[in-house]
Every structure is written in C-alpha cells, then in structure tokens.
Image 1 (cartoon, helix red, strand yellow):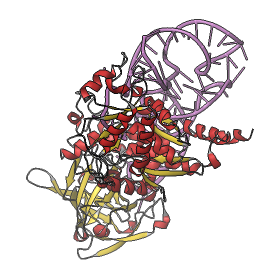
Image 2 (tube, rainbow, N blue to C red):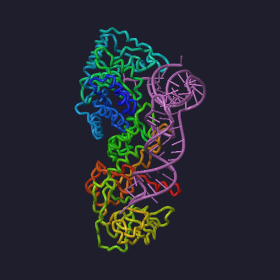
Image 3 (cartoon, helix red, strand yellow):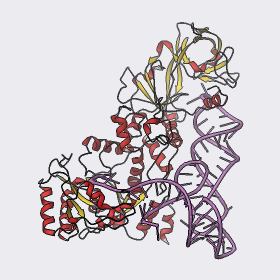
Image 4 (cartoon, rainbow, N blue to C red):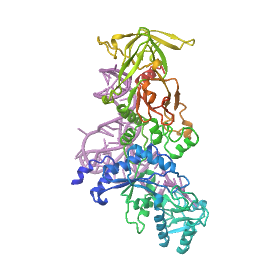
Length: 566
RNA sequence: UGGGAUGUAGUGUAAUGGUAACACUGCAGAUUCUGGUUCUGCCUUUGGGGGUUCGAAUCCCUCCAUCCCAGCCA
C-alpha cells in the first residue's frame, strides 16, 4: 500500500482527509487548492492565524496553492482599510498568495447569471415578505416553516422583478431573491435561503455598479467552485451550512464541486476574539486602536513585539480538531518566550531606579565593559557599555531587611554587577519618608568581567546603568486586557472584566545608551525583566518608547508570593 | 426524539481493536555571570452505565453533558 507511508505523516484530521483524497486520485493533477476567505470588515486576529496556517500551511505542505479571497459581499460593513490590513498581516506571518488575490465581488456577474438561470428553472423566486414576516414564515427550531405566498410567482414575473431589483427600481427591503428549497427542512439554513438583497451602498471595489448583493450561502460555495478550490476549510459554526454549500455547488452548469470541512475555532483564555467585541473596544476608546498592543489582533501582536514564528508555533501546538476548546494563555506566553529567548538582543534597563555609589571607585573614571548581545547566540556579537562610580540599579535589588531567600544586595552582602564587578553594600541613605535614595558599596577591582580568580561565588547578579551615560525612555508595561480567564462569564458583560492594570506607564526608567536609537521590529530582552520592542507609533530617534511584550518567568516573585510577602 | 456536532490529565492535542501518550501548566530538584535559559524527576487522564471481544479510548446499545443553528451578517 503506497498510501500507508503518507498517511503516517498526517497530524490532524484535515491532513488525513487531504492525504486520503490525494491517494485516491480525487484531486485534479494532485494539486490541492485552498483559500483563506476573510471578510474585510475588521482586523485579523490571532484566531485567524489558525485559519491562515491551516489554509496556507496545508497548501504548502502538500504542494498546492492557497488563494487569498476577500469575501466582500456586504458593503455596509466593509472597507479598504480592512483589505489593506488583512494583506499586511498575512505577509507579516510569512505567507504569500502570489497572483492568487481574488474578491468575491469579482464574481458578481457570474453570480447574477446563475441567479437568473435558477429563476428560469423555477428554482428561485422573488419574495416580498417583510423581514418580520420572513421570520414568522421561517418557523422555529422545533417547528417547520411555511411557504411564502410569493413562492409560486411566475417565472416571467420573477425574472422581471429581479431585473428591476438590479436596476434600482425598488427600495431596500422591498424584495429578496430566495432559493426554492424546503421550508419544512429541520435545517433552518435550507428553508428557502436568501440569495440576493437590495442594498444601496457604495462598494469598495464595484462602486455603485450594483444595488443588489449576493448572500454568503450563495456566494461562498460558488466562489470556491469558480476558483477550483479542492478543500474548503471553515469553522464549526458553518457545519449547518454545508447542505446549502453542497446545494449551491451542485447547481447545473457548475462543473467543479469543492467540499467543505469544518474545524474548531481558536479560543484563548483571557481573550475576547469576536470582531464585534474588538470593534467595540476600539470604538469605546478602551484601547488605542485596532493595533493597541493589548489587542489580540495581528497588528496588535506585531506592535506588542510577538514574533510571527512564535505565533505559527503556537497555533501548531494547539492542533486542529472539532472540539470547541479554550487554550491556556500560558501556552501563548510560553511560545513567545521560547522564540524570543533565541532571537532577542540582551540589554540592561533599570525600570525603577535607585542610585548605587561605589565609594572606592575613582570619581572621574569611565571604563567600557564588554557584554554579550545574546548568550543563546554567539553570532549576535558583543557590545561595550560604559561603567562608572555612580550607577542605577533596580529598587527591588536592594533590601534594608532582606527576606528569607533574598540573595540580592543588602548591607554586608556581595553581589555581581552583570558583566562588570562584584560589589558589597556598605550602607544606604533614605529620604524623609524612609525610602532608600542611595546605596553605598565597595567594589573588588579583581572581579572585573564578573568573575574572580579565587572562584568565590556570589548568589545575586544585578543589571545596572551608568548614571552619567543613562538614557531616559517611556516604558509601557502591558498586561492582559482582561482580568478573567473567561471575560463576561460572571456578569454577562465582558467589559466588566477589563483589567484595570493592563497598562502601566513608566517614565523614570534608565537605559543603557545603545537603546537611544532602538528601532521597532528589533526584539529586545531587558535583562531580568522581560522582552520589549520599540513602539512603532510613538518611539522616535532620541526619545524611545518601549512596549513590554511579555515578562520573563519570575520564580523569585513566585517564592515571595508563597512566603506571603506579596 | 427539531437538526447538526463534540466528549481522552488542570489546558490543548495524539493513540482507530493490542502496555494511554506528548506539550503547556503545577510541584520538587540540579546547573547557571539573567531568581531567565538548560537539565532531571513527580503529580493528574479515556463523561456514566451496559454489551461484543482473549483484549475496548477505539466497535455496538443506552444515558448524560456541552457547543452551534430561527440576519435581507459572514
């Protein structure tokens, strides 16, 4: 069995379907064709990454092609702004649709002709029911619907009315073109679904050429057929639409019959993913826009500093199945950290500074300390950092009364200043409120570079920045947008679960001088704190602004919580 | 008995009649010039009940639970 070997490669049920179709000669020329069909009515989010990876990824894996098709059949909600962002986001992920950029609106002419043909064959009719009446005639989940009085309208009259609809003779809502299927079907989608509605909206691409627009159940399957799509993957909620899909693709004259397969959409704890809610967060001004770094949009993720590789790794680990599920936010953070650990350039930034004065270090001396840019990647090279008598260190790296297990700086304790020297604290100064303002210490000149000949160990290592060489910057400490792992579960309103601390802005941070010219797009690790990236909107040469992508894991913080210190 | 779908560690996903597993999380430890990384170990799993079988997560019956569907949205 030659297909046996291939089947072993499949890692999920969609791959099994493809391999089975390939093995049984059900795919023309052995080239599968998939499509990613977003509606340009909002920005792509992390849930779409799964769909993108499935459609583009599977085409790639099996030597096929993937089309980008903008499903633009509702001009009331769609906009070129969204089309542009969608294309930018897919490219950022590293996928390429090549010349296969299509629009459902490209097929309006063909769709119209098919509709006319259906009318001629008595398979579609123009209905004058109002929306309220429609609903009433449709029946309910447990009761069958009733036929519309217009269902038996003559073919000639249907033809005339439909043409007049197209010509703008009637106002919106006056008439509707419906397929004549089965009003008693247990599947509501088969109860004479709407095919065309009147809409006086200017379309982003067809302008005012049309005032009737085709519906999803009609457009989508036929678009797939026109493009010779072999595998049409969509999310679970379209399962009930598959009979409509199969109906549309089997209309006489449509030669190619693609198949639809459904998978579970991606849900992540602490996130909201619906376009409606994301749009609301933007409209209400709760976030800075679609690309706010707290948004789960691809543009938000990019601005936050997540890497495309980590996102692809993430959706790969999540897998593909038909169970509605919620993935732990911790897996997302794990993937981001794992990837950034390999690629981020290490730098020293003191977020909440206090001064450290080395009493036995010459006042006028500055020496350049050599530091690795990335210990995980020697090819990232080294850089020189200025070191002098007065430094900034992290406020939480010094304690007057060190708690149990604390191995940072306290009077009498020796620590290492990263890459530089060992220092031992000798005393400290406080302000009138008792806050530490200055820590005094002495350094061991023999420990230059961060080690000593005697091989003695120090337990703590602090990062530092030379006072006279320090750069200031705005640091945006982002956290989860929602405080609940299931926003809205408790009250029914997801806005009740907004995390009040999702953004903390730090203005007093002190940075090593190399950061003065940091550029958006460069992955950084502020040592011992987290991963950061310069903000693409607000960071300027000489006035950097950084977004926190994700914190480093912090086992000391965990220990403190366990000891009840936090 | 409206229709459609789905139930495997805390979470996600494998295993399709032959020893239930991988990842994340959590816990414990080792290493470490980042309390990061890396490494080691541990915890916890087939929705319930019946049946077929030498053998069932897998096949059959039944019950239960959850999700989706009543837009002129997609």
